[in-house]
Length: 463
Image (cartoon, helix red, strand yellow):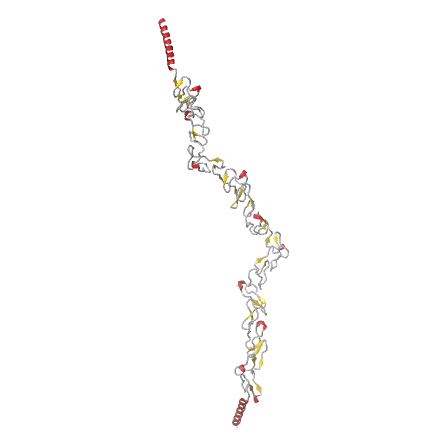
């Protein structure tokens, strides 16, 4: 009997279900089809019996019957509306179905749901900028600390501020010499109370003009055109003023010296009026002294020689120039000059150009090379002092022949023996050596001889 009751109940339920499933309009369900379906995906109807959506809910809807809509700023997760995890671009709400940001993340945010800070940003709003972590590491995205420390000269733990004594965009600049040991501004390096002595405001990192050295206590030397020296080394970038030398242009060359390769060296030549050379160039500003030439007036003019250029060159062959050191003629002398200087005549010659031959000097001595005078007199019958002419009334190659009886007692020609003005009375011939009174003179001479002989004979008889 119990079995029959249960069977009847089942049949009744089947009849009811059949009635419900068949008779409900689209998108309705439940007893007497009195309930509307929720928001099923793609607009499909729900189950007429349970109201469930066979393929899930439309976007932005959830719940067992797809009848719960998520608000802006929430999305569906595990069938519930939960708060969006991140921050979408322009503060837009996240996608209610996926929780993602359809147009991307807001500035400084990243991740699938824009839920975490981008690298180098931190804090709950990702508005904090990371400092300078060592090895370019990323700071902690919650508190901004650098896990392994900072770059050099940055202050831990955030590595955003410079250590004391440093400044600049990268804390790479050391503070200057601030007065009383004050710390400079970490951004611009300005010393709040001014500088120590000899340093320039506002950063006190540069020496005052014409100062240099670690503490700006050293004075610059004499730089060219009055320029300042290097504040680090003290050297003059464009060289020294005239007459100054040395690494720092602090050495003054004395008169008679000039700067060469950083040293004061002796002037090379001889300047006009023996003035000192230019201390910077070594040249002679007013020209060279007599007999000197060259860029530095350091060599003799052509035709002069020796250390003072006071020696006058001799008569070199073909007019060549003598050696300017010792005066010798490299290719020999002009005719009748004595090597090597070619200044004196060869023995036996004299004259301004040694063109005259010496006369017949006694004992074959050489005549004076300038005047031609024989120092010890002449060979017999030659006329002193030059011994180049016969004595009066002598002629011939060696002056050994006597002149004849020239008119007025004048001497004959030293070359030919002729009497240029004629013969004395009673004489004739080419050389006036033939007497025109020869017969008379012979008779008279014979009478004299006879007289002498007769006298001698008479004396003999008497004896």
